[in-house]
Amino acid sequence: MAKAKKKAQPVILITNDDGISSPGIRALIEAVKGLGKVVVVAPDKPQSGMGHAITIGQPLRLHPMHIFEGVEAYQCSGTPVDCVKLAVDKVLHRKPDICLSGVNHGPNHSINVIYSGTMSAALEAAIESIPSIGFSLMDYSIEADFTAAQKYARILVEQILNKPLDKHLCLNVNIPGIPESLIKGMKVCRQAYAKYEEEFAERKDPRGHNYYWLTGEFVNFDKGKDTDVWALKNNYISVVPVQFDLTHYTLKAKLEKVLHN
Amino acid sequence: MAKAKKKAQPVILITNDDGISSPGIRALIEAVKGLGKVVVVAPDKPQSGMGHAITIGQPLRLHPMHIFEGVEAYQCSGTPVDCVKLAVDKVLHRKPDICLSGVNHGPNHSINVIYSGTMSAALEAAIESIPSIGFSLMDYSIEADFTAAQKYARILVEQILNKPLDKHLCLNVNIPGIPESLIKGMKVCRQAYAKYEEEFAERKDPRGHNYYWLTGEFVNFDKGKDTDVWALKNNYISVVPVQFDLTHYTLKAKLEKVLHN
Image (tube, rainbow over all chains, first blue to last red):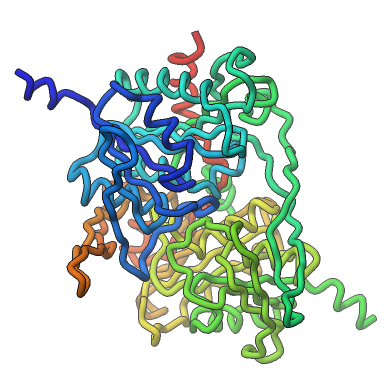
């Protein structure tokens, strides 16, 4: 009987891009305590901005870590996407029931979904038919308050475990960096067309050679009230369902007229 | 008068993910000779599988390279996406009229668009309102024959320079690895749901510790005749327009019903 109970427990895979020692991943593990068997496979170092990178030119390492009480955890030498792939093949030997990524230190709304290691790990799971959610808190501080993120993460995870909606479900969830009492709730949104206008800071090394630091100013070109940027500005948690079919169907139709005759 | 003529010449930015010394980028430069002023900014080392990664934790280097006759070229220490960003801000000081990426050694159809540094560079340009095309030849050999890739690259670049269709246009073009005479033409497609079923090869280092190499078998779950995989199998060049709005609109509508009440 105990065995049957154990078998029915959902498996929750947790990863992130800030690395296994970041406060955000600890907050996420605590948030879902008791909802299933949690297994952690996360990068051994920060992997922000790694997008959907995978490691093909060199091998990967995987080490067990005893840093979360009562939770099986491994650090991986690769990218967030590598973590998901390795977890399924070499740690779990099965697909988990859900994959969670984060909580990221800093926002991943609008175009950031494309650069984000946090969201790419979640999207990788969705490609593998594992429902997934990436969480990002709009607060870069190491002392950030994860109370609201934890509360809503638990609500969402319970809901998706109960009814996954789609095997390829992938949610991009951003939480405003404000006290929980000010949050108005969750809002399903589309990704805003907002991006960084880059400007590289130019410096000289001691030998007189130039080097460049990526910097940029965030600019929102999208005034829609159905966007994640709008929701976050108005104290909502933004929830954007993300897809991996990148086909631009509108342009496909246009292009067919130009190329097919 | 000569000055006016020069000003009207379109600027063609070329990058890739195999690195500036790969035969593929040389083939692409030759293919578009005379269509505009070509400027090359490409990675100083192979960057396959880097997806949409950007470099944020360390600075970037940029060095002029005199390896392509009569062509301004730079190698960059970063990812393919970094190359596009740096090219616009620090090399061209303007947006090019078109950005080309490749020719990649190996295919980038179906789900590969997400992992591919070649396609991520092209998509980055599209985000920046620069029409772009990524080219991939289904032949990994260093001796690969780029004749067909070059012929169709030139046709497409001329067409897009003449009529860009959309400022965010991004095309994922794959060329079958067959003699040019066997190619039936170009086919506008959607991205197939086909992916790699991963299996990591497990090895032991001399100290007895495990390490893992990513391997995988390509599996096509998508039997549609409107897909890139179908087109390539049937000796067509596949042309898939790619978008950066990752919102899953169908699931958005479903999710609204679940979360908004």
